Image 1: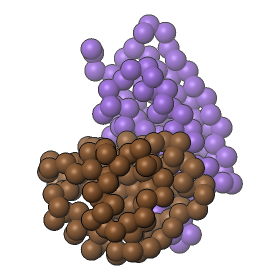
Image 2 (image 1 turned 180 degrees about the vertical axis):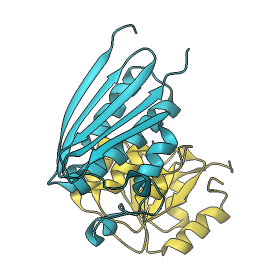
Image 3 (image 1 turned 135 degrees about the horizontal axis):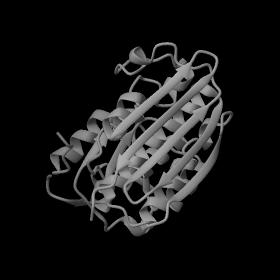
Image 4 (image 1 turned 60 degrees about the vertical axis):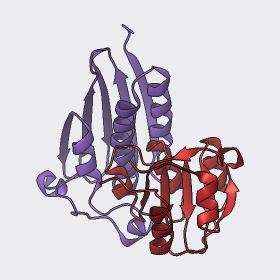
Amino acid sequence: MGTGITIGQIQKLLGARLLCGETMLGTEVHSACGADLMSDVLAFVKEQSVLLTGLLNLQVVRTAEMMDMKCIVFVRGKVPDEAILTLAEARGIAVMSTDCRMYSACGRLYAAGLVGLE
Amino acid sequence: MSDVVKLHYDVDGDNFMAAGEASSTVKNVLKRLGFGEDLVRRAAICLYEGEINMVIHANGGTIDVSVSPQTIEMVLQDQGGGIPDIEQAMQEGFSTASDRVRDLGFGAGMGLPNMRRYADSLEISSEPGQGTRVTMTLNIAPA
């Protein structure tokens, strides 16, 4: 695992707008994954704390919940609806939206030490 | 914990967005029972993939979970169209899901392989037109 960074640092690195989970900003995370296919996220049981995705529906939050993830980043400026935010809030998952596209968002976080799992 | 804990859920087939509620509840119960994070997550992945399958392929069904001191057993029963060729369905990438389901982030032929990967045993019985029964068992390592 790489060095940990906080969810607040992720927000800054991506110039993202935090949509819920303000109390999570100081939480440190150590690994991330980027996927639009939820079964690809579910294929790895090891802890991955951050999910970057272009997919926008409630099952993104469910998937993050099953995997004990701490933060969801919607890329390409996508903004989730109220139902998604309500569920994420209830599950203690921070949600943010960045204008970065998937590749750039992953690259910025990787360069900052937030690695993926091999 | 000497008692067997039994849970039952009806899974609504009409509402893709509600899929995962049963898995979420079971995950929380398993956490409360004090099982390790890894075991709980494996059980949650298996059940969630199964629940999603039931909703997208079989118009819902039932989930029965029983937790004994030795095992977590999860049985998913549906009345859907059944799986004509189970061996084929187990292959990564094989899918009969619609484009609509794929747009939702599932249906890429990864669900059953994920279930096989994380359950200690996976049994599927199915007859075309008679529905499908999926039994997944996870062993609880002695403390």
